[in-house]
Amino acid sequence: MRGIDVFDTYGRNVTSTNSNSSSTIEMSGLPNGVYFVRVKLFDNSFGTTKILKTE
Image (cartoon, rainbow, N blue to C red; front, side):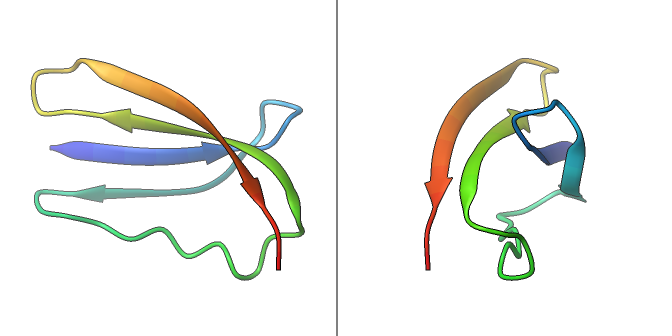
């Protein structure tokens, strides 16, 4: 299983999803700001990146 978690700058998990295929995270309800996105892959490895949400 693959998982995607989004954290705010305080380390709070603000949204997440688990999927066996490609996924889209809905962030339209979140305020503008900096978020960290962590993707966990099938082999339990993961990667994290920082994004800036603006609208």
